[in-house]
Image 1 (cartoon, rainbow, N blue to C red):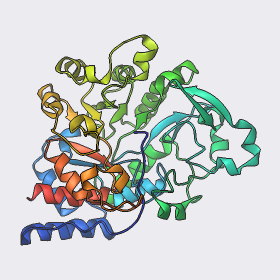
Image 2: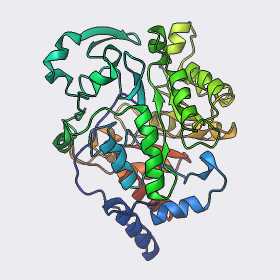
Image 3: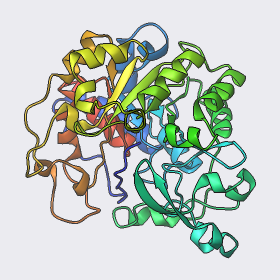
Length: 396
């Protein structure tokens, strides 16, 4: 999803202070679910779920814990190792699939089409000549791009940790997993749903859709075709599709009935499809009441950066929450902000501990602060931490 990224020390996440016997018991259940082989929802998640009724989005616990690119705080992102661990840790949804195409039209799961930092492609001399420089959404980018490889070629590569400075322990798993396809993810979802006895949810994203459409590799039709093939293109299907480009969500809205989410970056930024179309609006315009009403006409939710929910001051400390949560809820939109990470560099200044880049700060305090705004869920690289934080919040 976002272009930031970091996490990785596998020190204990179970340091939440529990006030009262009842909360300690519930946290104990959550810890067991996060560290043992329990494959169902934790006791706390069931408690949160019990207040929900209906199908589709309304069946999810609130606040929903979304495994960002899997459990990418502990495994290289967008691998079946990361996806599987997210489920084992109790995530309500797995963000299985930042979707980018291959030269022969298959959809694969990579954070970006440039794969120099997330695979071992640089170690393959047979692909040395594929290294090139392209302009990706206005940014000159050098590396290896998925659209220059066939699926068969990409399958010879293996995933590596994207941010080893922050997650040195994750490098243990470099080279273990290949690049998954979206079709493989859909099959995996069905398999895991059967094995675990509960519905597994996924949250794919169309990446750089305008860029790929200009290359003749339109993403939305490919996504819709696969969702239809596997019977997952309905209103209550357990697949939420997201994109930073509103026009991609508008296009998907005509192709599938899935719940759809518009991702929102910094307030001053412009979605790239707006840039290409000459639309002068920024994200700040989209989060006005009028902008949110427009989004509600074709989507069911928004995925704002956390800074749109609670801005930071120049020193990186949290300030006063905006009205975004209230305004979005007023037009019927759910909010799933991104991204909570345990390591110091990714936490607001007031929640950091020490200065080590891979040391954990007070992520529980940060979760609590964001939950208190009324958000419906959050993307996190550490689903187990998120579940424990939810236990604190729900049972406070």
